Amino acid sequence: MGRTKNQGDGDRATVCVVGGGPAGAVLGLLLARSGIDVAVLEKHGDFLRDFRGDTIHPSTLDVLDEIGLGDRFERLDHRKVAGLDVNTGDGEFFTVADLRTLRERHPYIAMVPQWDFLTMITKAAAELPGFRLLMKSEATGLLTEDGRVTGIRYRDAAGTEHELEAELTVAADGRHSTLRRAAGLPIRNLGAPMDVAWFRLPREPGDRENAFLRPGVGRMAAMINREAYWQVAYLVPKDGWSEIRDRGIDALRADVAELLPSMADRVAGLELDDVSVLDVRVDRLRRWYRPGLLCIGDAAHAMSPIGGVGINLAIQDAVATANRIVPALRASGTVGVADLAAVQRRRVPPTLAVQMAQVAVQRFVIERVLSGRPPALGALKRAGTLRPVRHLLARGVGFGPLPEHVRTPAAL
Image 1 (cartoon, rainbow, N blue to C red):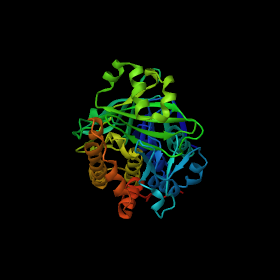
Image 2 (cartoon, rainbow, N blue to C red; image 1 turned 90 degrees about the vertical axis):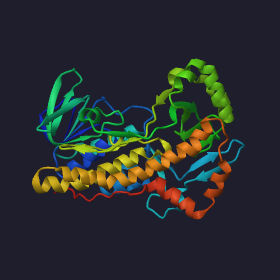
Image 3 (cartoon, rainbow, N blue to C red; image 1 turned 45 degrees about the vertical axis):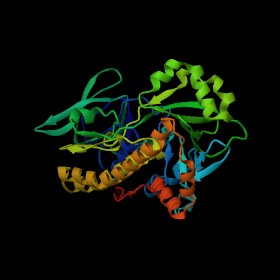
Image 4 (spheres, one colour; image 1 turned 135 degrees about the horizontal axis):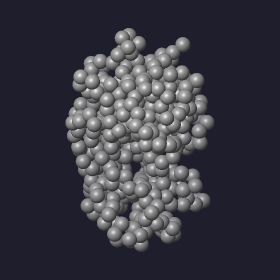
């Protein structure tokens, strides 16, 4: 059986994965499944953090099927969403990216709390020999020898420093990656015109079932159905939350009520302390690796929340990484720079495509809305009536430009 511990019980692993988010957890599972000794470090003591990406798209659902976890995922409490509705503000709704047009096994997005998804993945990995999950273990720096990364330094819950050596270290520690910074890898920032203020509003009988987007004039929100409540992503101008906070809670309540009149009677309970602000970034590393180190997921390319594709793109990175490094480790016991470069070559095109699409939406929709100009909803609605456009949007959201499939066999 694998081991789940709060503190390391050894000073070496074949692969050390830093970050227990979707990319790190799935990579750890895939490696352990292939018989590779792997340690996954997560700096928190659990996965219970609110307002994390939890849209599991068809590309990820296919991966779960390929590794035999489809049935286990199906038993999780989740909602299936076939598309995203747009609220025009005059009582009319229309659907964009209707996944029901896809002739696939999973023509929907599964909405599931990310902590449930990560718990399922790590529990499945813990059933395999060679897997270790080190909770409350925060990476603080890199170990290097002759220019090659040979592992990490990390601090446990008691503040004790440890060293963990590894043939390969994978940085999956998010958009504020400690290891990316320690490695000095060059980054390109594409910018974002907004941040996202997350909060909850009550759901009531008679409310719509589907998630929906509400663009207004000067403000915009996305509403996600969580059964008992609406999770609201309220867009604010970049670095503009401090100004909104200084205006006070009454002004924020009034703005939300104006944008969402049907929710006007529910904003009275909203307080500033209930709001969590996401610093939206769109960036990517120019080089994802150095000898002995590879960055994946948000550590390699921070994504905008547009489309909810970040978690799925990160998991695709993990699959592509396992597909490349498992054969290398089995053949020679090592992972060369050529292998790491191959992962980047494989994953850069879909990353560029998604980021270009997100930047276009930011520029032509979100900047327009936040600057006080009315959104061009008529053009969007007309485009959505064209079957090729509807199919392209659905496939782009559901699978992305280059969906990955698991090529690594399970160890006997």
